[in-house]
Amino acid sequence: MRLRLMFVAGLLVIVSKSGVKAAEVRRFDDLSGAKAAQKSEVAPSRRATQQISKSPATAGKAPSNAPAVNVEKDFELVEPSGKQPQSLPFDEAHSGIQNLLSYGNELFTDGYLKEAADQFKEVLERDANNVTAKNNLALCEKRLGEIDHSISLLQQAIETEPLKAELHNNLGSAYLSKGESDQALKSFFQALNLRPSYAEVHYNLGHLYSIRRAYDQAVVEYQSALKEKPDDAAYHRDLGDTLNLIKRSEEALIEYREAKRLGDNSLGLKLRVVAVFRDLHQLGEAEKLCNELMKDHPNNAEVLNQLGLTYLRQGKIEPAEQTFNKAISIEPNFAQAINHLGIALYREKHISEAIAVFQQALRIKPDYAEAYYNLGTALYRKGEVANAEKALLEAIRYNPQDAYAYNNLGLILLRRGNVDEAIENWRKAITIDPFLAAGFINIGRALHASRSVE
Image 1 (cartoon, rainbow, N blue to C red):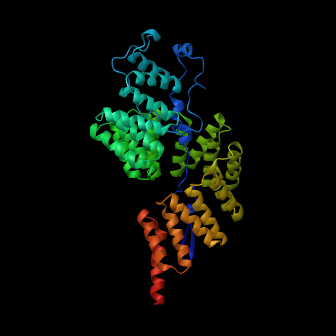
Image 2 (cartoon, rainbow, N blue to C red; image 1 turned 90 degrees about the vertical axis):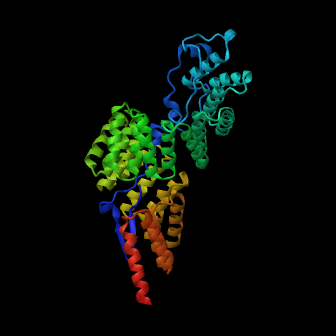
Image 3 (cartoon, rainbow, N blue to C red; image 1 turned 120 degrees about the vertical axis):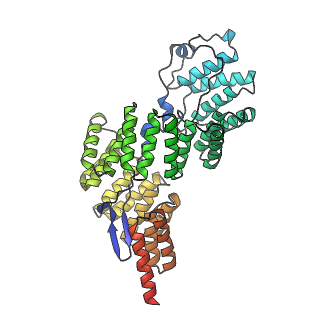
C-alpha cells in the first residue's frame, strides 16, 4: 500500500479519502504458488522408501534459499516413450534406459530431486543425446537452484530436437527464473510457433508480462491459456491477480470464485478475495473474512497484514497499527507490513516515525518502489525536499509506471523553478494514468503561471 498523497500546485490532495483505490503490494506468491516446489511433493511411495533411507524432507530437496519458481505449470517433465509400467519393481540387474527414466520420474514426483537427477545422469552416461533425460535432469537442476546448468542442458536438448515445443517452453521458463526475460520471451515465442495452442506457454507469457507490468498483454495470455485448459484453478487465480492489478476487481472476483470451485481452497486464494473486497469497498465483507481466517491462522503474519490493511481502509488507524505490529513481531522482516505500519503512523501525523519505518522497510527490501514513494511523500511533508526528490526518483527507478511518483516529482521540480521539467513529469504521469486529474491541473496551473510572468 502507498500513501495516496498527490501534490497539486498549491494544494495537497489526500486521494485515499476521495474514493480512489490504493494500490496495495501483496505477497500472495509467498502463500499460494511461488513455493510450488512444495506442492507437488507428496508422501513418498513404498518403493522409494525401500530404495532410499533418507526422507524426502531432507533428501535431494531444493535448498531453502533456492529461487522460488513455479515448477508445476511452467516446466514439463517428459515421460519416456515405451516406458515400463510405474508399478514394476525396480530391478537394477535389468535396468535399461526406459526403467531408469521411469524410476527417475517417480523419484522426482516423490520429492527425491538429487536421487532422480542421478537416474537421469546414468541415462546420459549410456546415451549422451537422450533428450528426455536432459530435459528431466534440467528440471531437477532448476528445482535445486542450478539454473545455469538447467539452461545448458536444455540448449543441448534443443540442438538434438529443435522442433520439440516442450523444450523451448522449458528453456524459456529457466531463463525467466534467472531473470533474463528477453531470452525467455524468444523461447516462448519459438514454442508457440511450433504449437500455437500450447496452454503452458501462454501461461508463462502471462507471468512474464505481469513481471514487466504489461498487464493488458498478461490478461490476453492467461485467457489464451484458459481456452486450452478451462479447468485449471491456477490459471484462473493468476488471471484474477492481473485483473485486480488493473482495477478490474469485479472480474478478478469471478476468477477467484472459479478457482475455488475448481478446488483451490488455499489460504492465499482467500486472502486474494479479502483484497478484492477492499478494492470493491466491501470493507465489512473483507473484515468478516479476515476474522474467519484469524480463527484458523491466529499467528499468520499475512492474515494479520490483510486485516491491518482493512482497518486502515476503514479509518481505524489505532487497530491497524496494533495489527501491523503483531504481524511484524511474528515475522520481523516482513517489509510490506512494515511499510503499512509506516502509513498508519503517517496518518496519525507521526511523520518522523513514519520516515524511520519506511527506511526500515527499504533496508529489508531495497527495490520496494511503494516504500520509496511513501518515504518521498513523508520527507516532502517534513520539508526535506532534496531527500524527497531522491526517494521519488528511486520509486520511479523500480516502478517506471508510477504516475503518482511522476506527479509529485513534478511538484518538487516546480518548487525549484524548473517549470519545463515539471511539466514533462506531469505529462508522463497522465500518459501512464489518463484519469490522474492532478496531473492535468498541475500542467494547467504551471502554463498559466508561466504566461502570467511573460
